[in-house]
Length: 479
Image (cartoon, rainbow, N blue to C red; front, side, top):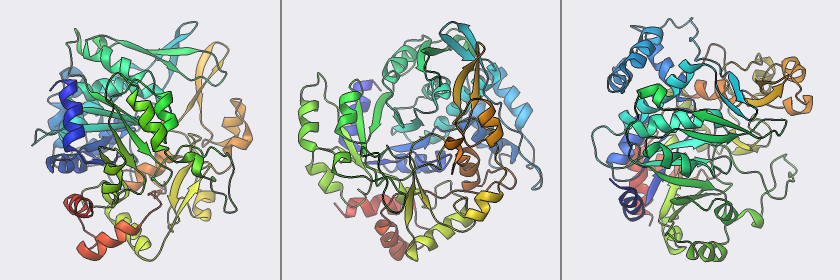
């Protein structure tokens, strides 16, 4: 399917985009289910290398991961992954997981770097291929993948792996990914790519990725549509060269854009206001001047406002929270029940301005047994052993990594500001525990959008084991 056909299909048929959530919350099972039902199913592309190898260490009970790896274009890489990580019958409950490789970097020139551990690059490509391959099975409808621009060093091998599997749409937020449309274009034409990467001391660096090192002579790949996730019309101005937009307001779950006021209220939450809302008049004026039509979808509390979004000119809505706790989502089943009970009992969401090492506000639910609980937070051993949200910095000509959620003395010794460590948590480890793939003694974290009314309504009608199909029917019924 050509790019124009993909975009037209998304615009005309996909009134609902299922949000790409967390680490493995929107997994291939959920995305495949949503796509089969005619909407856009989206897998989370965050830390898929670790997701894949932990599934293998759990025994890959239904054989899905190994089945997808059998279709990976480089079977030598696939076989090495299985040999290193697959555990028949699964690891013991008291055994910890083997970690994915921690990112290391080497300088190629004064302003160019690359991943030093080639096997990690291979894992990223293969894992993204696996997730999209599995999400696309059993139907011919579009499938998307969602990334965080903050995780810059993972992006090129991840996108390439997803495109190898025929992904139809790449969605990205948590920053302004201006360079991604060009990278998708280069990959579709069988070429390698380079993208800028942030280094703490503000030096201008780029990171390189060469697909030939993965699959030899790279053939042309289907070009995926690129949907930029922005907070409002200002993001549309800053990110012009995309195929479409998702307007994700501050009511949405997970990471949010910082409030424009830079202030916090009496509870410690970012103070959002009218300046953070979408100005539809300005939005329509900007889009009207563009050479090509760029559809957009509304997100953040829109589950029962599809009609409102369509009247505003949107092609539809993106919905996360309702899908996050449905039967098919990746949230660990017992925690999922606790979360739903918390919601039904009047629980609320708190927008924590500091808990994420990314620097973006992050929505959490105040559920006992999660990292929100002060005693659990205080007693957890600080560690950075996955590396998804590390910052890069230069020291004596070397590119090194540090994270404000790591041990405080290690972070400070590496040149970090001790004030940046206050209240930080290792979202990497927390989010893996949320989906039942956590390391020993790592607490989960629960995140959702601010509006629970739709979850309450659907649970009252369909019970705690409501399905993705129930969610879609609920949304469409309310139009």
